[in-house]
Each structure stands twice: as structure tokens, then as C-alpha cells.
Length: 243
Image 1 (cartoon, rainbow, N blue to C red):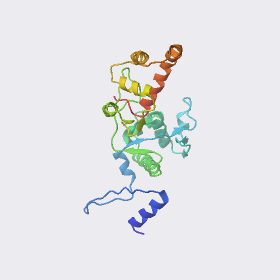
Image 2: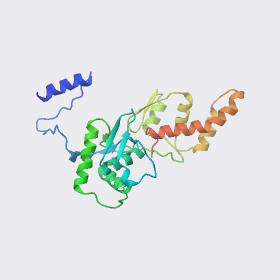
Image 3: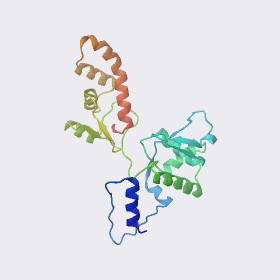
Image 4: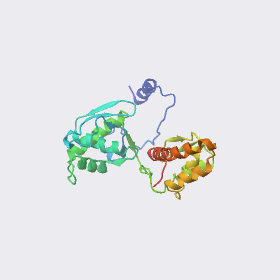
């Protein structure tokens, strides 16, 4: 079967109603079967979390089961690959280059500063490529600039601020997610995230601007710090806060 026919059958199997095709010039040599060499050209991210993630677990026991966001699981029996996935699980939404990932994985295994052999690099890269082809991890050509930690004076990305000013109903995060503006409090918080308000100032401004019945005011002010903390954590997680 030729490539066109194979792709058409894959469209039926995957229920793709709209085909995305990359058209290349005749002089471009296509490599339809990627090799582990290409992994070094990407930044890697993974949502998978260790099934039993204990800070007291000895480094030699890092290998094991990882669970994805939809409940899917994978079993990793190679320690360096498992350590790499563990590293990515702790910084989910952020991505690392292969060199950075191998360095941090070595440190997690108690081998800080030790060079990774060419064979181990090839093995890990091949495992990552296989997981990517199965749709389990992400490869990115660039590393988005955003804060997963909440800075003292948080601010949203310039694009999100522009969309907010133009009354968009959803905002685009630094990692390409769509953030829905579900309520007026969220919109107000986003407006205030201009880099000039710390947590206390954010809470104070919201208290002044939000109108609630007098009998509900004490409960509202009591719950507001927790609400603000929750929303800030959510914004940081989805790549809405800029560095």
C-alpha cells in the first residue's frame, strides 16, 4: 500500500474528519520513520505521574508504574527513563531538552555530575520517541516562557491581557491552552494581575470592588484568600502567568 492509501485508512481508523497535510517541495527528502536522533531537537513534557511517589523511596526503586491524566498507565523498567519521567512529572507543563532531562534524571538517581553514556542516551531517546508516537508525552519545538510558581507580583501574559481588554470569552495561555472566563471574579482577578499587586493587594482590591450583601460580607472576606490562592495556582498550572 502506498503512503496516500495508508494515510486514508488511518483517517478512517482515527475518525479524522479533517486532514492536516504538510506539503513539501520535490527536493525535500522525507523521513517518514523518525529515529531517536530527532529527540534532541525537541523539548519534552509529560503529564504522567508515578503511581507510588514517595520522597523516601530509594533511587534504585524509581522504575515502576506511571499514570496519565485519563487513567492510562505505562510500566517503565529502565531506571534512567523512569527517572526522566519522574523529573517531568514534577514540573508538568514545563518542558526540558534531552540534555537537561538526562542531567536531572542522573541527579535523581544519585549520580549528579556523571556523564550519560551514548548507549543510555540512545535508549532513553528511543523510549521517549516511542511514548510520543503513542500520544503519551509531548514534544515541543520551543519552550514557552511562563511561571509555574506564583511570583510575588503575578502578571498574565501580554496576549492574555490584550484578549482580556478586547472582551474575549476565553484566553490563550502560553502553552496553547484555552482558559475559559467562567465568572466575574476570575475576570476581575485577571485584570488585577498586571505585575503591580501582591497577594494582599489582590485580596484588598477584590474586597473593595466586589459588591455582596452586608450579611454575606464576613463569609465572603473569610473565604476570599483561599479562592485567590486556588485561582492563582490554576493560572500558574495552565501557563497564564508570565516570567
